[in-house]
Image (cartoon, rainbow, N blue to C red):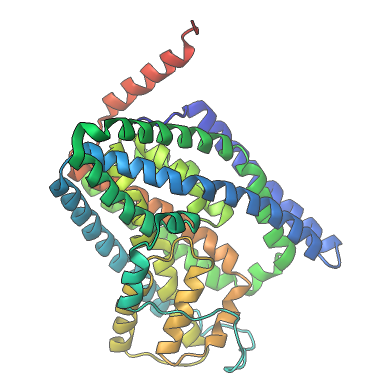
Length: 433
């Protein structure tokens, strides 16, 4: 299933998102400087962003269910599904260890907490973030939906994936009797991608509102206070992007650059809205335009949103160690390794959970007797950090999907992609009967 989007409209939307990003920063700065209490402005801007994110969320459940079910039903073999899942999980584990390890290495190298020139919150102060660690029992309970209607209502991607896998295998098992149902779901997936295109034209307004609200509330001074910390974190993000590109290049060859170019729009959208979820539909469409098989993309991408949030995982190790350094708490190499392994588990399934990274960090701090109040040091800049880690999550999952497509022999060549695009363009240009 090729994505119903043209490169021309994609480039226009990218340009408008960039313009909205700049105008939002200017507007936010003007409001912060000229208005005594920016709260009403922040609230009103927040409504615009909320509307956009809710529009995106209304698409995700039916899109994941339809595309994943159709992909598995057309595979027709449980063994193929198992092989695909195993390859995806092996990549996710390797990428997770790389992300967590990089964050740990950089925070020990830069020591951002040691150089912090800010008064520390009292150790007994509350951060307002409820610590929540996920045990094996909790994870399994969360994994399997009690009701698919409940899972879809809450946008629990992992639960939707589990149900869709069983449903797709069931459709494949009954053969021709499910043909009409599978075709209907394929039609639904096309419709949802078309709805995605319509919703995306609202993205520049949401980007403008999100950036303006963040700067109007915090002001540009927050960048000066946390300049070194943010610079070190974003350097880590750039290094992680370079490592992901290198990994993609080793497997995809020269097409790695084309992959990064293909997903630049959803990456920018995730950055501007600080939401990986907002970019999901567009990421799926762009990966199919790049040449990834719909069967593989519709399977690997939703799994990645629960198991492969590279930017969020790097931030977790970076933030925990930053807070420990700020309070002068030294963690041994063994403790840091234990923390890394704990975060490997507790970071899974955080997609779609508001401020999920902070929740995971709060749980980790508690396990190592590091004051939870240290989170207060990060709350003021968390939105700006979330922009970087959300964009990285999109890049990481895009690379994972392309790599697994290549491993499965399901990645179309550049020639095939160009021919499909030319055919689609000529079809659109043909006069209607």
